[in-house]
Length: 388
Ligand SMILES: Cc1ncc(COP(=O)(O)O)c(C=O)c1O
Image (cartoon, rainbow, N blue to C red):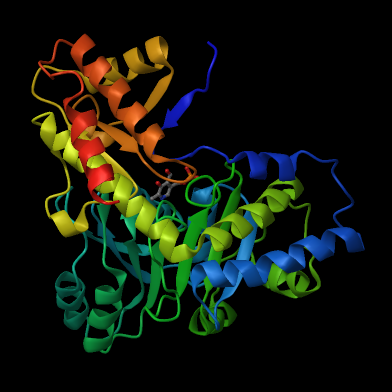
């Protein structure tokens, strides 16, 4: 089909032409000085995007799941107790990863559609007088439900409970789209990856590590090799890696970080908030609901839209992809068949948001739903015009 494919899943997101161009170059010797020049550039820029002065960024050739693993095996010892807050598919998988790696995971299962509240964290940690939990697993943006968690309130709750556990945060679908303040919010390990707000193809797993997490690394007894921070920390300051890095992705990362910093992080976050509000207004105009229960927790990265009984979201997604080149996200876990997800993150403008909504309307009509064509588009257009 001519024209562009509309990749509107909640990551991987669309790759800007500038980033594609930056990667379109010959591979160079990853142990040579020319390579080090580029990689040495990346770390200070990552620190700006992570909003950290004290944290150490680490970049693995891996997906987000690999970065989860790195956050665990470098800070914990076999059998350590971990408290995991589960609010959807991905926070559940993070907990599962910890369990599979042999840690004693206690899951706090919260309703899908809610965020993690400081109160819940306080309640759980204040019961742990013996400080059994070595780490608390949380998620910034739950990509299955379209819900954001206020990380500042989590740190405040941990401090109020006087609990020394490390705060591990999955911001795989938050970083680069939602405000994240590594130092100010007292995060210990931030986990993210390349294919969402960082505007790159899949293939990089990134972390930011606090001084406290580095101390935990010294004591952590879990066997590790590929994901060992030590080798990275030894080589990275000179611009090198302990094994062959994903060179092209690093060239792309350098460019993508420039793009985010040139636009200005606050502007990037405001743009995402603006698109999200437009999409939420469209969903309301369709007479549908998003899963997020509280307006302040509704994600600025994606909307998880619930369909009425009898409409199969998988059929809708198949239709839009086959007929009009629009890729929407499917419902995950118990939401499969019942919900679909609209990603509105990364390299995106207002007209692309509107086209996504127009295509979604066509798909829903093709599924026999009684949605007036243009209703969601118009609601979103009004919002975009109002904000001028
Ligand atoms: C919040 C969140 N965490 C973790 C992951 C896993 O990342 P990956 O698929 O890159 O391993 C995803 C993937 O979509 C995600 O959205």
